[in-house]
Each structure stands twice: as structure tokens, then as C-alpha cells.
Length: 205
Length: 205
Image (cartoon, each protein chain N blue to C red):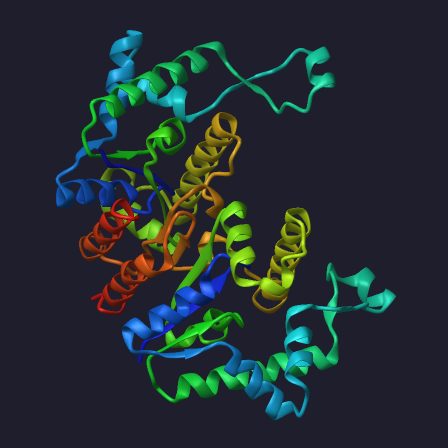
């Protein structure tokens, strides 16, 4: 079984690349399905679940605890429960034994024992702004500055969540097998390049 | 003309990958040749040149200067001259118009107007230690701890020089087109994967 995980900067095209990779390689594709599954298991609204998992609200540690350890904050109990549900959902996916592409959810770390090919997708801010403009008609009223703030804020949250769960730095080269900068690429043309790389990666001796 | 530049962590196999890439693609390969050329032009010993370019010794700014600006240090005049020679040597290589692979020397930044494919090669410390052990018989007397310190120290210097010259962070995803983690790869098997990626990159529309 081959698992490809994709972490990505908001607006870098990581999700589209993941979808295209899955199509080209004939792999299952997981993204929103994971949120839906967590939502079902926890009997909570999927938007609420997504929000809780992506925007960490730190629980203040007690003063004693704060003075004893260098802990910046703790997940709220509910978020922690959702993270555990998420882990179980990811485990269930892996246990199916099907080749798949999983976008987001720190799946590379949660499923590390399955030796996934772990990709990180990034792009220059200019390219990310362009992509966000193209895909989000409802957000066209945002100025470039506002859009840039939105991109940075989403990525800051992703980084925070990853660091809390994994202890490793989001987007740092040490944590991934391949980091792809999509700036200047047409994703349709990039896909076979990454698919080839992935196939050779899984065939390594 | 296609230029591939390779920056790399010490011991990651970046140089060997560069050589193999050049062989497979039929590109010219530049590495030590650049130091030799600078050495000839500056009438200085090549070991001395390499050392001066790779181990920055900061000139202390005057107290007035130091208080006025947040400058951590300045290159010594001689190092600055060697860096200018290096830039000229890289420009000469590019002006030849031949497809080539250039390892090190921050060539991606110096030759940015030639739109090189800019690669960064990294690996886990364990893999780097193994590679260093295999290739450096004369260094076998170093303990793992000493070898690790050597690797870290060389990379720290590379990072310092890059930051001084380019203002961009060494090994940070924003500055490269592709970051490849060689851990677990046999470089012979990795080469065609990267060569394919490079050919598709140069063929982008």
C-alpha cells in the first residue's frame, strides 16, 4: 500500500495537486471526507469540527503549571477529543490498505509507521494571491492586503496545530520527503512530474 | 540554456547527485572548477580561497556604525573581493550558454536572471553521518558526536554566507524550486527521478 500525504501553504495549489495526483495514479483521494467522518463520529457539525481543528484556541494552563514548565498553551479538551477522532479516522483509512493521497490533517505524522511519501507544497505570495483570486469568487471583495493577511493567518494556524501535535516545525525541510514550489507551474503539467517522482520513491530498493 | 543549481546540507549527497544529474542529462558540471578559476584570477591558493569563501570572518563594524545600524558584521575586504570574483566566474559560466549543473556558491541567487532550476538537497542527520563515514576514510577517527558537530558547523557557515550575500534564509522553502530529502534514497535511483522533474520544469509552458 502506498500513501502520499500533502501538507501545503494556503493558496499554493496543494489540494488540486493532490486531487490530480490521485487521478493520475489511480489512488483514493481523502480531504473533506476526513472532516465528514470526524463529524459523524463526534455528532458535531462538520463546519464546527473543521474550525475547531484548524483554529487552535489555547486553554490557559494553571499558574502553577505555567511556572513549572515552558508550555505555551494546551488544547481545549474538545479539540483534543477531535484530534483523537481524527487520528482514528486516519488509522481507519490506512488500515483499508488502499493506495491513497491524503491532503492536510498532519497525516504524515499520524501515519508515519505506514512510511508515507510526505510532500509539502508551497508557492510565492504573488502566485498564491493569484490562485486565491481565481478560485474564490465570493472573496473578490478582499483587497490584496486583506487576502495576504488571510493567507498568512490560515498558515499560522496550520503551523501552530502541527507544532502542538508533532513537535516538528511546519514546512521545515527536515520533516518532508519533497518540498515543491508551485510558482510558475501549471498544475496540470506539474502532476506527471510529481507522479513519476512518487512512483520511483515507492519503488526504492 | 538550462542551469540547475544545487545547494545542500553537508553530507546529504548533493554533490554526488549534481554530478550524476549532469552525467544523465549531458550537462556540464561545475563545482571545484569555480574555486580553481577564482584562485587563478586572484592569484591565491585554492585552499585559501575556498576557506575564505566558506568560513566568514566578520569584520567588526566601528562602534558608531554598530550603534546606528542593526548589522551583525561585515565581510572582510578580501572576502568581499573573492565574492565579487566568484560572481564574475559564475557569470562567465552562464554566458557560455551551455546547459550545466552548478553545485554550491549560491549560484541560484547570483544567476537568478538566467532562471535556473534551484534545488536544495537535505537529509536526516543519521543518513548524513553514514554518508560522511563512507566517503571520508581520513576522518574515521572522529566520533559520531565530533562528526555531527563538523556537519553542523559547515552548514552554519553556509547559512551565514548565504544570508549575508542574499538576505534569504539558507534551506528555507521560499528560496528554492524543489527541496529533496535524500534519506533512504540510493542516489543512483534518485537521479532519474530528479532528472525527469528537471526536464519537465524546463519544458513548462
